Image (cartoon, rainbow, N blue to C red; front, side, top):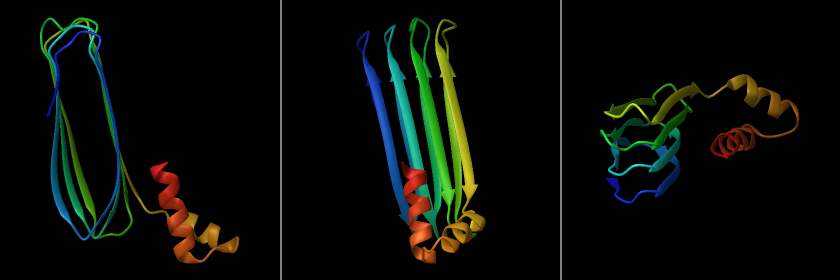
Length: 136
């Protein structure tokens, strides 16, 4: 949990992880308590034989005029056994704020792997390159 208690404060979080053979539930909470507070959360996940539930709870109560928040979560599923559930939960009680969120989930694209293999990479090298590019 992150509490933004001082006007003008900025919270930037970037999280990148590879999750293998796991079942995880993660809750990230950001509370804006003063005007002109700003938060930006970017989460990138690569899942293999895993399940992930991510809840991003962001609160902008009355009085936090001029505050901004952005929550993004992108996930790459490398196999059919993986799944992700992302819940961006925003509680907005102030009209004079900017709030946005976005979620994207993609399956591993075998055509991309094949293309890189046709250029001389092994399957493992091609998959590793695609994962690194996604997490970049």
